Length: 271
Image (cartoon, rainbow, N blue to C red; front, side, top):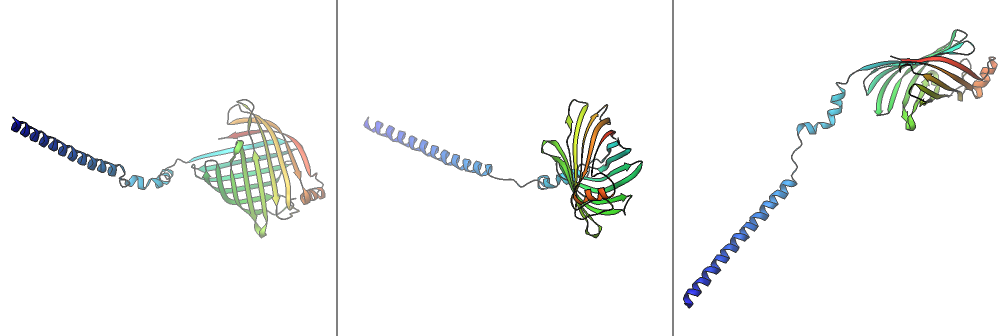
């Protein structure tokens, strides 16, 4: 009987040892598999060809961008004292690159007092700002026409102010700076009030064109338009001009007032 119990204890011990060995092997195998899984989790596959060229995607899209064009006449107006003005622009291109033409014309007593034409290449440098470069030609009645090179920055400033600043470099080392700002206040969906201001600085005196060094002149306007459609919007308003410093002296010598306020009636349109 004792011998039988002895052999039973031996067999039970052998079975327990075998079970422990199997469990240890399974544990070892499990750790090993887990290690492979960790390696796989940290494994970074090589970037696909498309991802490697993802940075080029925007250029690829821009290569196939749609081209548009637009002509805008911001001011076609009649002013008091038998004077008038035209201010407009036209552009052609895509979202990033465009060609611009800008013009400003002023008339006195039915004759063109001064006019300018700008031709610019424009490139978007952010969603709201454009950097422009080009040339400007002045058509002067009382003096020789002048040519300028232009570097300009325009766009939409915080609080939706439209800002256009231009640095001009002319022949014989002439220089000028123009800063314009405009804001559109929607009184209703059709009634829009537009205050705007333009300031001109010059590096030299130019008597024939009545421009003086430093702050030369300022123009400010307040126009209220009614948009029958966005493309057809007549307006009424007031326009104010003032010359400073030497420019004011040149105007007085010509028998003109250095400041003037006029009522205006005009049309704003685009197509």
